[in-house]
Image 1: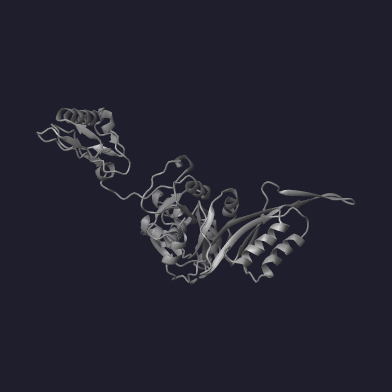
Image 2: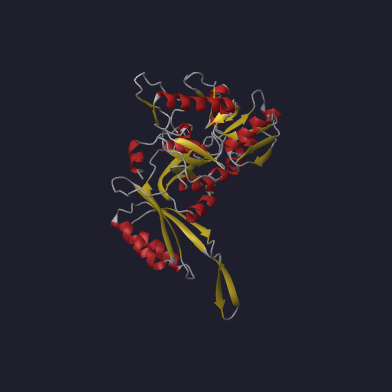
Amino acid sequence: MAAASLIKVPIGQNPRLACRAPGRSGGLVRCSLQGAIVGGRTEWQSSCAVLSSKAAALGSQSIDGHVASAPAQNGEVLNLVPVSSINGGAKNLPQPLRIADLSPAPMHGSQLRVAYQGVPGAYSEKAAGKAYPGCDAIPCDQFEVAFHAVELWIADRAVLPVENSLGGSIHRNYDLLLRHRLHIVGEVQLPVHHCLLALPGVRKECLTRVISHPQALAQCEHTLTRMGLNVVREAFDDTAGAAEYVAANGLRDTAAIASSRAAELYGMEVLADGIQDDSGNVTRFVMLAREPIVPRTDRPFKTSIVFAHDKEGTSVLFKVLSAFAFRDISLTKIESRPHRHRPIRLVDDANVGTAKHFEYMFYVDFQASLAEPRAQNALAEVQEFTSFLRVLGSYPMDMTPMTAGASSTITSSDASLDSS
């Protein structure tokens, strides 16, 4: 057997070479590396010699994420030591996923991989943990990267924010929902608890700048004013990223608005706790997957749709909304966004000339499951009045009480519904 077939370490297996010498009877030797079978003592010794020589030539270079601790001598077992253990085994935080990291051949582990936007310590990470307890959370540097991560099988799910009780809708994610073909399979409502973070030993009087996500700055605007802080407020990509930036650069004149978990992760102190202007600050997240779940009727469900119409006037929108009203279906949200492919509609007027009107897409959430006949009939009627209709998902509602001390775990029945 060619020795080269024994060199490659299979991904996910123990890289320790557990070859045992054959007995004097000359029986076959089974090697744990790729399950190769070496026939005869002479061939076994040749294979080990090849491995030893290659390890000696590589020296301290890594082999599939491991380095050789010492070349094997006289048929000894060759130990491959993980690089992390050589570096002291320091706990490194996961880095945000970037476009360049996307690959169509991801690793598959036993844990559910959930993509979120931000860095460790972000509220989106907490929402991912609430939606899927015990998941392997994958940070992404952009919302769209999280969509791509699920589409390319790098992640199994994505948890992304769509609206906040104070800041309103996150329009970027509504646009991405229409652009990509992922399905909404659940929702999570997460209370937001902001903290003012600074480096250890820094006093509030020494601060000249506060950085955070634009919505976090807006949600804490009045509280910062009441605290008497004469500071410049600057926008940052996300809350936890602002805390990481202050800690990494040792900025003693700058504070960040982020979560208490971000303070723990990046070694910062909490100067003020609960600085949001409204204690009822809640962000709604949606859980996205490649396949939809099967709608049910044994618990409250919500359905999200998007539609457009090519007729002038408000009568079409009235007819669409009436389809739900006549069937006693409650709407929980309606959002309009400019139509990307047809942003302007020209309307001829014999007296004035040509008028220009914006074209809109309408996003609607309503409280009903697609398994209910009334919801099916309502959508059938809506389709008659619209030029475009798409169901983004029919999924169980998050019934968690809307309090700051709400539990951060989801019931097992909720998780079992998302079995796609």
